[in-house]
Amino acid sequence: MRTASATRTSGTSARSPRCSASPTAWPTRCRCSPTPSSSCSAGCPRPRADTCAAACAARHQQPCASPQRGHRAVLADAGAGPARAGHSSARGGQDLDRRLEEAAWVDAVTVSVGWLPGKLRDARFDRRLRQLKAARNWYPLVALNQTGAADIAICGSNHPAYLAAMGRGAGWWDRRKMALERAHLQNSRVIVAHSRLLADQVVEHYGVDAAKIHVAYPPVDTDRFRPVDPARRRALRSALGVDEAQCAFLLASTGHARKGLDLAVEALRGRGAVLLVAGRPPDVQAPHVRYVGYRTAMEEIYPAADFTFMPSRYEPFGLVGIESVLCGTPVLVERRVGCAETLDDEAALRFDADHPESVAAAVDAALDRLRSGRARLAQPLRHIGYAPDTQAHLDTLLAWVERLKASSSADPTEPT
Image 1 (tube, rainbow, N blue to C red):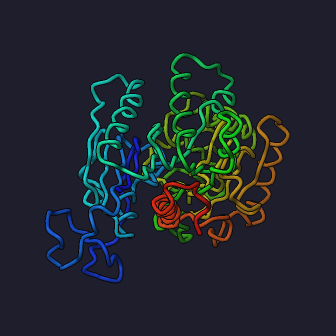
Image 2: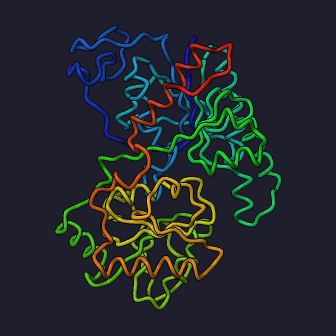
Image 3: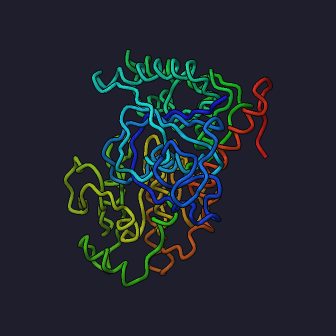
């Protein structure tokens, strides 16, 4: 049998290991571009083609204000991870950016949906993926994008929970989206949820058996997001026009209603602090709000801030929180944001956005930390309750792949 993984998401380039001409790095996979031969010019062996075919469906778009978001972070190494385990990879999707370094790791299978209106593309993709799975005998199929063909369903969001948090009713398109989400979750043998919050929402809104849901927090590029030295930090602050004596809060957002821009603006009004907004231009005018543009190099923005503000109304995980902490910058985070469950009290000042006094207390605590010189996190990984690197996450997914391949006729259990 062949294994597949399906994703329809955006992609950005991430660093990958070199060719296994350095045999200790990748003993079972050539890092060179795929060729029909069994080895590359350096003599690196190619994996057996029938071991694992990962069909990652990808629709590459422009990166958002803070790259390596959610599924994109997983997808960036989706070819490298299976290859490390000796698997060959096929990535099926709407458009594979051949400029990506990772493109050399996969045999692409394209699902053409660009001719359809945006809201119809998921349904077309789902139907075509079901056909491909049956025709090519892909098993188990790991799906980041929602599809009823999934054997291992990656759960990165929950639409009914989003609608409830935003105070919205379900329209016709919402019901179609939820029907596909239901099939994605209920048809799968295993669900990998990106937070305990999401796992609980899957049970609440879709009635899925909790026994098949397992939490694996999403990965972050730990080489890219890291603290900088004081001189570099001063330079980054200066480039943003932030005075040394000024307290700077950062809000990264391309969807201000969901991300709670209005809450952040009000919470910092009259506090003598500046709110830096990265992403979409803010739709409010206030003296303490400064737009710093649409940013792709967020590793240069997090260290410049004193705190990252996360007052989101709905945030199933929130990679911004982990990226910020990895850069040494603590977060003010709404208690219902998924990443809050992974951060200790030094890294996260929690608040309840439904109660203004709770938000004000978190801002007070942040300003007090800054005045007393306790705002920076010198050893960020100590404050994060899981291993955030990409390989650790991929190892978890591959453990499920191997477990399902070995026990396809029985209920899977937690991989060891």
